[in-house]
Image (cartoon, rainbow, N blue to C red; front, side, top):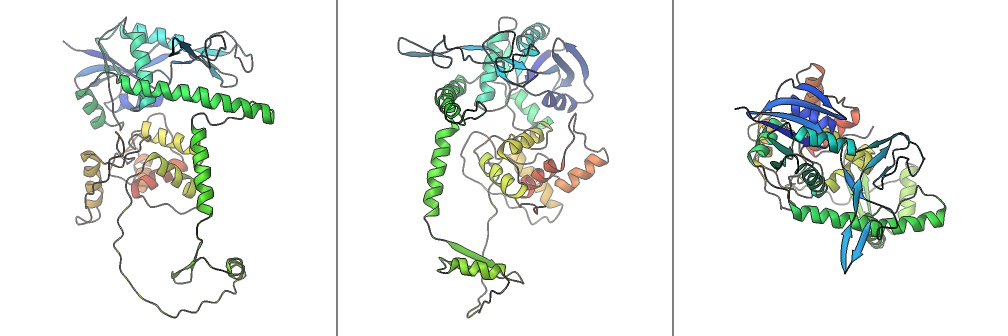
Length: 414
């Protein structure tokens, strides 16, 4: 007997990519959902996208403090179904047929997705929830499980960190239940967003007269910590580094006449007398794999990308099946990742590969490519049709970020 399963992911692009990994899928629609059906690991799987969060905390003032009621010393978060305005992009969960911001009636109610997912769940033997492998994705999986379980109780959570055949088949072999501890962590984070960020944002609105300003939600205290550390850093000693013709680098610690030196350098009248020149050899170890914060830092420094743009590009590379999951604080590399590095380096020299072990900082891998190809080969394979990216056209920014992730060496700034 052939088994059939429904797989729910967040992104329509991710749904298309997964289905196309196993051949050309059959496509059909049910309400707002597009379902791609393909044979995956001996199971007929229909892949559909729920488009992110289905529910969110309400904002009505009559239900507690920013959507959280306090009853007998307990905090009760009150969630509603998400609605989105097509006109201005506003999202809310308080119900109503008009956008609370622009008053437009052109809105999308995610109750339609819930209804379609419930109808779909009855057509399959089991349901796989394959939302993103982090606390936020776990909360979305929990919501879907609660909404679908009365219609199909055979529900499993899939977790994979790379959109590849190997990653997906491994997830199918290691199905699990929803991790309630991660769901609780995300609930706490969302409440912090509301209680800290909303209150501070309203202070900004009052002070500057603009409702478009935001305090950054739960990141606000983190930002304060960064500002304090930055001010402390500025009190530390200065280092002037001068690179001469021929590549020679001179470091001057705490120069007393810093402004005069910089002015002389700009006017090309700086003269340097070398009294002692020595040569020394050093072993420089490669940096560890990228974590999210390191990627955002280099994306800004070398690609001039904002954090939002960098994360969007990383999300699209992940959904295209080119890199591992991009929200991670870990520097570990799986055996699959080591095999990819070995295969890539063996094309250059069989003696280059030296596996390394980095400290474990989180549950996920570091960010790495999932194919043994660099950005140049990626461009070539896509151009000749050897590698297809479903429903995604890679821009120069995608290729340049992929280059950083492949080599850990920043590309030249254009």
